[in-house]
Amino acid sequence: MEESSESPLVLLHRPPSLVFMDELLGRNYRILDINTSSDPLPIFLSRHAASARAFVNIARLPVTAELLSLLPNLEIIICTSVGVDHIDLAECKRRGVAVTNAGDAFSEDVADSAVGLLISVLRRVPAADRYVRSGNWKKFGDYQLGSKVSGKRVGIVGLGSIGSFIAKRLEPFGCIISYNSRSQKQSIPYKYYSDVLSLAANNDVLILCCSLNDETRHIVNREVMESLGKDGVIINVGRGGLIDEKEMVKCLVQGVIGGAGLDVFENEPEVPVELFGLDNVVLSPHSAMITPGSFKNVEDVAFANLKAFFSNQPLISPVQFD
Image (cartoon, rainbow, N blue to C red; front, side, top):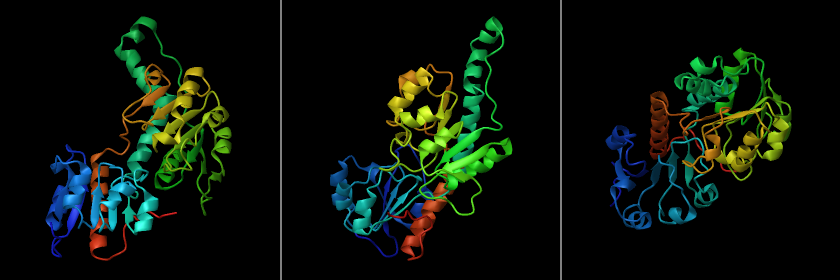
């Protein structure tokens, strides 16, 4: 396939069942959809994608140094997620390949989910629902006490767009907000902790919404959970690898911490079976951002980045290389 100046070739990867950006992309570009071929990926790319300058990666396909070597003319990767831990950023930087993410396209929906998970854990909403549906209310009477949300001390790990929206939603509850980030934010009224261990020791709740990288993997380990304490709650809407999952399971079973609300897991879609029987744990299938509004926002941001690239304009949501 030879690229035409009137209709640039764009490489696309997405879940086969997902119809996403079809109309926008089809009107402006020639689409090379990886899912249309039964060839092994390396063969498909070497045969058809050598001239592609842009790659829209919807399905979080791991972009390794080996894959990049098969795309010699690639100049930009458009990701539809905020996290880019599936991209070899060092190799992209070396090759001069720009990377964009979803920016704040679904920040508000993820923040809503984080607060919803927190309320669900503290008030044991899913367990109470099961209690009623099973007929236990009629058999055994009143359900066990939950815990109040108002006044809780909440530590947010990663005060970016999502973290800031979470803080704004919790302030009206009277929650006392503090945070940990790579550096202290200017003009932010919340107390800053330079390490997660100190953040945990001074809060009732930890909410994780930072990116996953070598520095943040297992940033919440057993020591952090012990510092959070037996009534402490962990909410994770970031990435599963932010928590040492095996230690978290032990801490929940042993009563080292009080509960957890989890939208993400280390080895998705695998979830530790020990969590299924715990009424103080609320589980969600990595769906914090899955709303029609978020999909529309992500589509708009991804297309705007693609349009900016081919127009030699500044990118909308570039990922900054370290």
